[in-house]
Image 1: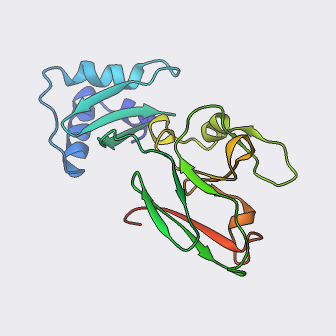
Image 2: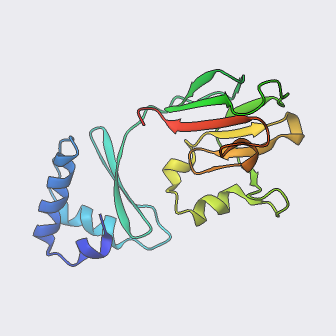
Length: 193
């Protein structure tokens, strides 16, 4: 929901709309005695704040002028995993696979998937400069709660590992398109998509 659109409504209309929206998403609106105060805090907090209202099985969060209804997900840490060409894996609500595209005999470096640890860098073009993954995700307007859950795919090992995919947001040309240079196409999608 748009914060400015909600702010244009009367307090009673704000309460009714938010309660209706929560119910429409399949959740029970919380029993709050002062909805107007809760919504005021959610809508009027400073732009550098990340206000949140929790309900049973969800939370309402504000980010970049919008209110998001975010279903709770179990915080099961997902351990980094290596995966092999021709096999798919499940990783924290995502499905990943390396499919043969051109030359199934091509040798691949180790491929590993993990979540953000901090300090990762992304190189969008082979000859381009790298930039902080944190800054790139902010530029893409990815909400903070989503960033921590995105699968990051690396090719290589140790300090030489190179980031080749960020969830379903970006994939290196080496592993995407109709004829990827690596000979293998990386598929990353949310489970259920």
